[in-house]
Length: 205
Length: 205
Image 1 (cartoon, rainbow over the protein chains, first blue to last red):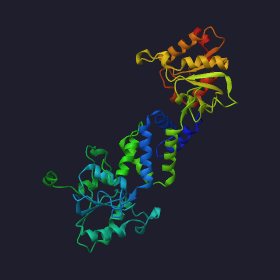
Image 2 (image 1 turned 135 degrees about the horizontal axis):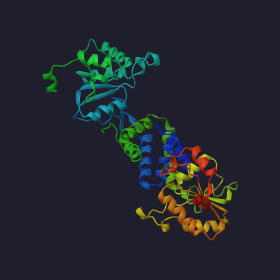
Image 3 (image 1 turned 90 degrees about the vertical axis):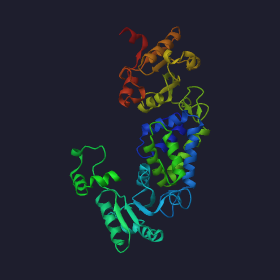
Image 4 (image 1 turned 180 degrees about the horizontal axis):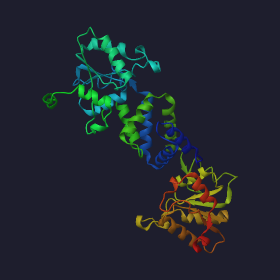
């Protein structure tokens, strides 16, 4: 693409380096920003500078944080006896958005995947064990993706904790709310039948 | 949405202010940038700062420019006897991308639209006439979107230039009526520039 201005062309380059932003949308964004008042560009600059200079990884749960320990780990209202294990920060945010979980989190940084050469030593598993010990956790909620690698990771961690007095739970696998039963895949539907709940119990929760 | 970090949440806000970027994609972009090495954030910061501080409007053609006069207007290779009239800078870039046009441009800043209260006095029409005079242009290529407002604008400008010895052409109607110029594919747009017709000839047919 040719432009009358190298500044615009640089902006298009910078924006099209973002995931799922093609050249055309990058141009659209750049021209929008060029035509905009100060505010949007300034906000973007400040946000990028903060990410560049001030963003940290929480030393307890390994989520992004503004200080050494993140605002979830330091929140006195959160239930410190429960730790939810997630693969990455996107999943943490997805769970936070549901507003149904009040415990702490632990970001593994991936799942065990022999095919991709990811072993337990590449993940935050040692730190998870140390943290459970230190917090005296009662429950570990394994909120990993329902894949072979996710299941392997759950199995691996549960074996490590066999001797401990801690409940390990996994988030329920089943048909999604509002979904059509006939379109659910056989494996999911089979699992949701196997792990059926008494109706009374379901109403209580 | 809740986040473990206000820095991330600010970045999501800044990114979701962009057109066609929703909260979910903004979060995806923010987390991508957070996890990225320096380069992408630094490039974005530099691009925004340059747009904020150094971006100018070319005093001749009214496109974005890095200096007082843009790189197209100062390019000695460009054919100075032909001026292509476009509605906005997006359309200019779309035409440049086809690589079929070697003349100069003039950005009107819109089209005459009585419904939206845009009259000739709101557009760069006076400056266009002065420029044609100064350049001694031989041809004016009207590359406006094929809409009623675009046609009105072409008609208005052609009337103003009736007494002058200048050919007024419009890009060929390969572009679909009612369509936006910037969405036309490069081949169609390129062909429609090459097969432009004198305005009088078009009226006869």
